[in-house]
Image (cartoon, rainbow, N blue to C red; front, top):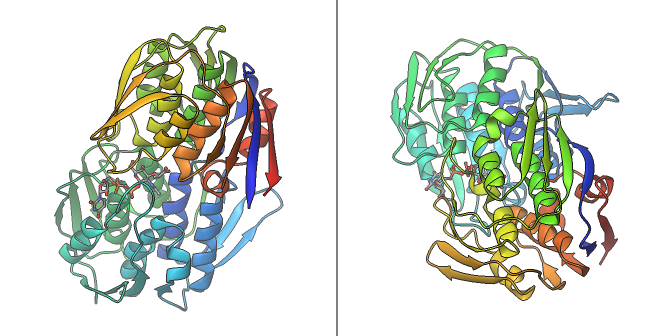
Length: 419
Ligand code: EPZ
């Protein structure tokens, strides 16, 4: 295993390019199952979750080639093994996104139940009920989901709770169903819009994405496509927080600032100066200590849960008191004990963290626990003079492409070393 060693207290400065979105790439890779011929993806990020998805697809009979120009050729059109094995699914919950496409294309799927993870129990009941509404027969036995459907039939789907991947699963399933499906209370995340844009290019008939009501008219088949994955707004947001927490100035390139309004509004509240252009954002903290900001996570277009841990680190050294309330996941506070070991003044009360900013934290030896909690620890280490060590950085590699290389480009003193 690897760990990161950070000599913090340096104001970050420079330019960095955002990679393609993890949370767009994963559903779009699973959408390759729906197509009658290969898809070619560009701007896909080099992340372990993408590798896991490719391994899962390959295990089911798909083929892929990483071309020399970094584009990804994926042929998921002829699966020979309609089983998503536990050993791969347990490492990535998003594997559940194979279910909708497999049912739509082959009428059959056996998928390991994705277990919970550090941030919560992560049930999939919304996925299963909605697929049954489309006519699938589903049973769960010995840790596996067994699903069959002679032919999925379009239906009115009402989600009791907004779910990103459940919305994505049903959209993909409905593309090849007979008749029309309308999803009510659909998630509106930009990654869903990106998936739908790709599906429409493949021949799907979908309207209403980016709203809470999405209509899908089933078609007979979908074709391969060449598609560029949208930039990762959470990676971009994380680097902007890195500039804010260290008092620096950075420009992020290859980013759609329009999908980051809730994040940018909160960064402005910390006292950052922000300038946006067509495809770039510049944040200048001018060496100032950030002001504390109150955070309440919610579904898009409100403040994203995937940025909560990063802003908790920012508030830990900010000027003033703040509250951070997590409304999406029941246990997305694994970064709190580690930040507290650095001297942060954080008190967890139910699903709210009460934070009193301290002028500076003390460097420490830390343990990463989940993807965004790990990012939070890196940010705290960057802001703190002295040497901070973070173990189990494989969590970070799930969602951040070569994080230490990009941070070095911004002037950080950070090394990845073997344990
Ligand atoms: C997606 O997860 C993202 N992952 C998560 O990003 C993100 O945090 C989350 O959406 C919320 O925005 C991908 O897109 C691959 P949900 P997802 O279903 O779809 C409950 C990251 O850091 N729920 O929107 O799994 C669930 O427990 C990751 O990049 C059910 O109860 O999240 C949660 O409380 C982490 N039953 C709430 O809904 C279900 O069947 C929202 O979860 C499904 C979800």
